[in-house]
Amino acid sequence: MGTAGDAEQAAPAPEPKRAAAPRTLVFTYGTLKRGFSNHGLLQDLARDGDASFVGAATTAPRLPLVCGPYRVPFLLNLPGSGHRVSGELYAVTPRGLERLDELEGVSRAHYERLPISVLLAEGAQVDAVAYYAHRSYADDLWARSGEKGYPEYSPAVADGYIRRKDRPQQLTFLEQIRVFVSSQSS
Image 1 (tube, rainbow, N blue to C red):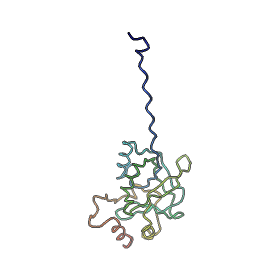
Image 2 (image 1 turned 45 degrees about the vertical axis):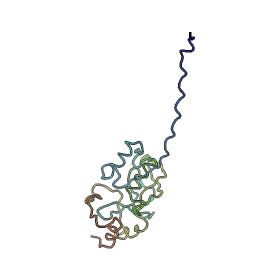
Image 3 (image 1 turned 30 degrees about the vertical axis):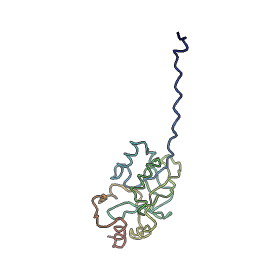
Image 4 (image 1 turned 180 degrees about the vertical axis):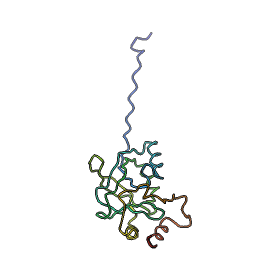
């Protein structure tokens, strides 16, 4: 016959806490922002726990934001030119960054993910990353834009944007950029 102590079950050991994946702050300025065509990816990442909205942000340095072929937005790594660009800041896991890198064509030299300093709405300055136009064509985009940029990729600026699936498929994106920068601005 057992004693009362035998009836007591040992409490299970607590589950070890899984360390949260480190997050990188990502500044978005174009089609990844809320209300634009590629924001669905960030919504998917948020649903999977791989991204969370931090808040509105503005670039600390002045940088050119221009539109390339099909009204695709490009942030140019030319500090001191352009405007302080408005956008949104997200905290993203490494898995989320892989998905953003794929969308932005980092391995294909469409964009490159580089550091950026941004100001949050309450005034704090934080370090983040952003997807800049690849250095191989950034200067040409700036020249093609007449060295004029936008302070924000707004619906008015985006008017005429053509989604990737609706663009001509016979040219690569880099070929489309080369054609665009060699054409006359209107």
